Amino acid sequence: MIKYTLKQLKKSLDILWSELVKRRDKQCIRCSRVERLNAAHIFSRSQKSVRWDLANGIALCSGCHIFWAHKNPVEFSEFVKKHLGVQKYEELRLKAKTLVKVDRAFLEKTMSELQSTKIS
Image (cartoon, rainbow, N blue to C red):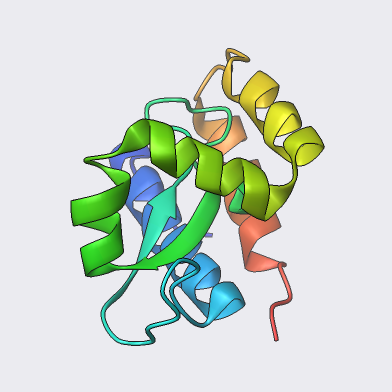
């Protein structure tokens, strides 16, 4: 196995996570566009416990991502609650508040889990 720096591992995880979210959702969850899809984090990327959790991402077109979700966080949160269901949203919110040690073992385990994810 090639040894990557922690920075390289994080970057690779970000790319893989994004591709998996877009492949899973196939279109913007808000407006149904299929062009210029972004993988949007429900809870901030700074929350390492959910940064690469597929449940913490939804596909949004670039317009809905930048000009709606980022500019209207309360409305975005309410939309996501409705989309996920309140229980799943609350579970994800609690997980987002969990502190994790982002070391090589954590990143490699996360990479392995994402790489084994089957999305049709």
